[in-house]
Length: 80
Image 1: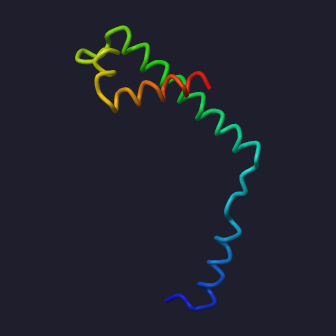
Image 2 (image 1 turned 90 degrees about the horizontal axis):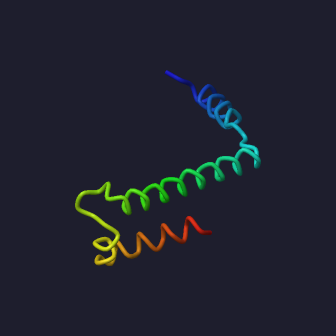
């Protein structure tokens, strides 16, 4: 069984073992995630236009309220 002191020591060790993330690393990660998201959104629009999805076209997606929102947010996200 662990004593109160050993539990306290373990708690202190884990508190100091947390890795400090550099601001540059965070910016690189955010930039990478945004880049991947834009690529996926662009690919989705291309696939939709090319007829990759058997039951969906741009016109059928625009008939649905959620589809309209999806297309608009994809286009805005790519262009911003």
